[in-house]
Image (tube, rainbow, N blue to C red; front, side, top):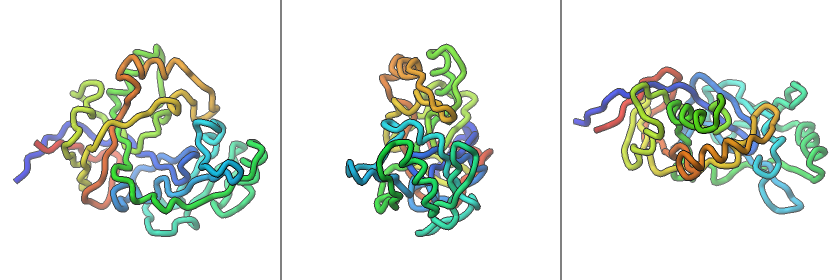
Length: 240
């Protein structure tokens, strides 16, 4: 019989239905495959360049926010459940071309929405980060940082944990509520944390802080092995 030690709780969830856009912060999510249902299932595609758009190269994309009307849905086609909020506060259906036209006008090229056929094929699609790691980076940076900057799916509060405690779990398994996760590897987060999700303005000092703190690596990548639902407040237990 496996033994598990409770080390903290689930402090936050974030999901990004369209990979390059801002996302949502639901109180609970269903698991689908090895990740969150509805997470990073669409891309914005630049036909002229033949590449997916990224907030690394088009920072204003973070000002558009995608969300699911019902946080507890899953399936192979969630388009009808997704809404996109524009910077002016208006909201459109995912299939409404108006918001795509708005982005195209801003970036000066044709943009189309494309379902990610490989969305559920990623080995470790979940980005896991601890509050303690964020607080450490804050000290290095010299000011408060919103965890949303790091675009983690799962934010853990580990009261007795040290900064980068999650790195020590690589190769191990943890329970979050009824969901069993395997921590697979370190996850790189560099340019995106320098972008404010609301403005979005660059704060290059954050990059330097991360580089000083851990060589540019922050958080870990994980995959769900079993379980159905994650809920903010769920206990976190590491398997011995």
